[in-house]
Length: 333
Length: 271
View 1 (cartoon, one colour):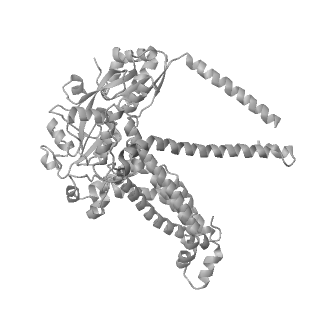
View 2 (cartoon, chains in turn green, orange):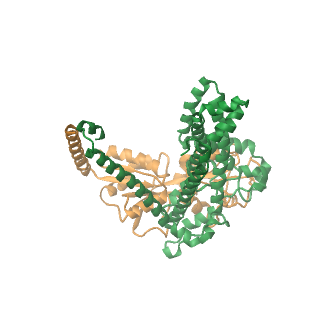
View 3 (spheres, each protein chain N blue to C red):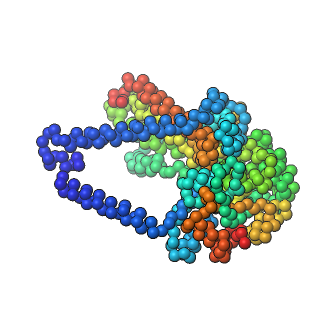
């Protein structure tokens, strides 16, 4: 339609107005859809929150057993069981996401610096498309590889019999757990961060780093003190995007992170890294077949509601961080 | 512009004719939709293939999965013609549902092939899966040493329901065990973990050691003869008694020898 407009010729053509209306209606529809989704999830989730109050976010008891009790609620709506203390889920989500994003950010910054400044041109030419390809690999493939290779390796070769025995009446260390989840998640979120940071570093005006070099600074230091500093808003944007992906990662974590709602304890020493964890997104996947039981469904929607709120906070925090960095750069948005 | 408009109207007319034609074609054949248990699904898809060739493509089938509880809920809400369930009716199920038994299936206790447990009895299962016994050295006949890794299923699974009812009784599953979402996942994890123990449908025991339960090996033959104690039922669930095409289809499954021979390949026929 829009392509046909010039043929009709004169300015003030109705086509533009029509395009505006159609596009406006579309974006309004998207907004409506999002609003509807939020309202829907929160309405569904409300009974779970209202029955538990703030204790929903607290600890206490075994979450797996609580979920089983909710699932086995009596048929009478008056007797529905809702008791849930979801602290282990909240903590695991923060731990796995935070761990992966921290390691991932460090790795991505270093790789991006290498690609932009140090890699020979032919290598950079190969690396960039490969990294973009990696960013597009579906998570379930990472999950499968981790399940077939990494989990048996960790379970059989890294975890010692004594470590297993020391916690055997509380949890089991079978190879699935925190460390595998964090490592695979790091591999998953790094490519997209590397891609964004590389683009940002390339767009830093050449004169800035050259100016630093002219003052006698070596290449690495020039890149670190000038290039990275100028690219900070893009780094934050990359980190936010990566965190969002990590937060929503479900299938892979459901396969390799242990699927047992437990809060890994840093005081346990090395064992901490092998302890099972369950994030909200993975919990939704694991318990999706219980949706048909009313109270279970409401509890699962409560997980979804917490995820929605976290991602909203995340976008907001990213926006604030980028705003406060405006003064460092030329073209920050 | 006018060319475009003409093209658009031609396209719209074509779409209209098509959309009118498809329901007209489909109306000639009834459609049977099914959802539910992932354990029942492989059996039902085999049966459906044979049924179509036997009755000359007299119906359309749509088979979805999702877990026994999904099947029961979908059938109750009228979203599907038939819900597949690998668990027995529960008192909390909606009223007015009819469970028609179509086959039986064995649930096997499995260990890694490096640890071929010679036999296990109900007390042994309850001690291990309940968390009372946590080391292989306290399990008679085990060649493995060290801590036991228990793999169980999430509560919505029909296999979990059967395991709890047949093997565990009132004993609760150890709270530190990791619940998994499918037979295949448990199969994979026990295959790669020498200290592992779990339970799967007989169809999923490849590459694992199926532990004889109360001295009876978990095999198709023993399940068929009724000697193996760990068997459960497969059901087709309908709202009210099955009607029309669904009635003919369920009757074909339960009453013909053709269907029984398909069931007999990996499951236990009713007759």
